[in-house]
Length: 63
Image (cartoon, rainbow, N blue to C red; front, top):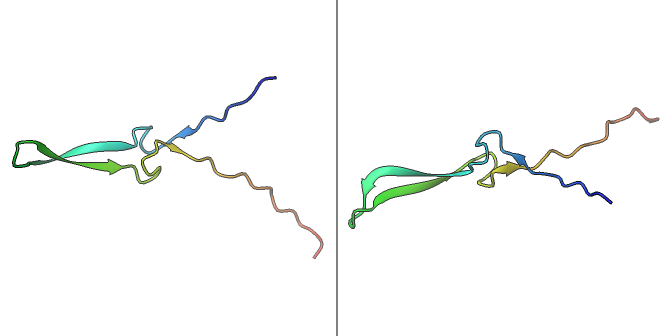
């Protein structure tokens, strides 16, 4: 029997590159460049987003 695998959607804002390292332009006392890590705010550093839940349409029922 075949199985379907739900692939995670790649984040539309970061294209899957969820975390980047940016140099600050400064150097520490031992000569290493100072860096900071920044995460994508949409996917929170995961690289993919969770699909929205599907909801059943509301039907007009008897009140």
